[in-house]
Length: 354
Image (cartoon, rainbow, N blue to C red; front, side):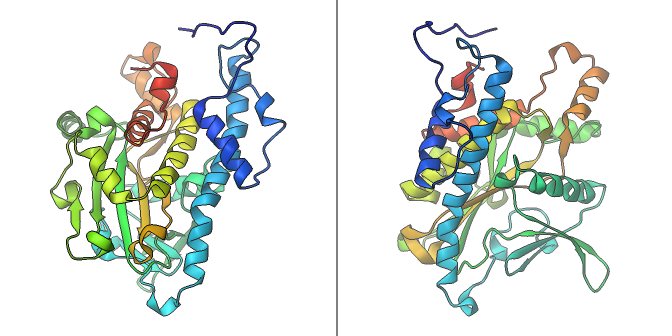
């Protein structure tokens, strides 16, 4: 259904995330397309078609994403450059929360992930390369550095390391989306994931903490807390925002997440290329820098990325093509929940979605 038109006397204006992008871009001197304030940014407004709105949102989104990525990384580079490289650990193996700890290696600025079997590894390599090389997606994902082989001939995906240069990395692995199985999955696996979604925050929020470590007082190791289902401490919906705030600690880091998630949800609002199942957002900062540590953030885990054409084919096979929607509604729900907990504006409130 169409939204009610605004009175003709008012000019269509940008959404809250888009306005945030304009302010952020101005502070970082990012060049926006055209006079950005004159772009059509909201559909169903007077003189603003859906296609015009989509193009306007896309242009501002890209500038916003680049600005947000710059804001999150400039502090990281300055902090890293000022420290003795011998004191850096580049990664903490105790904070690898995936089920493949032995399949992760830290090599300075690079992270190596062993190519998984059953086609997941090749799919992850394929889509990380595509996403990393796309101007629309690259601000949100690690840099793709190719596939390398070790002395035994095993293949490893090489990507940028989010914790490179950190002395005391603090990491949160946040699973995003309401569906975590691929099209054509075995029924047993599908039922297992459906049960998991129904009994955890996956179904209710589109989010679940895989693992995170909250440092003790003064960012000390003493008194640190481990959360997430890998640590057998799954936060409830009521505990979730408290855990997030205790992990980030500073308004500056929470604002980085808001900027990133706002840009990403605006992108997901219109992108109709891919859906992401079992994917995470990884967030990290250096506890050695205390409150001054900037937050680094990126999407990870692309072994279950599928094209919208694959999803349409699944819908046709299951006889639900008429209700098929060409966007990743599960991922949008997760981002919207994250923004709501951090005080941002999500797509659900903007668009009146359930």
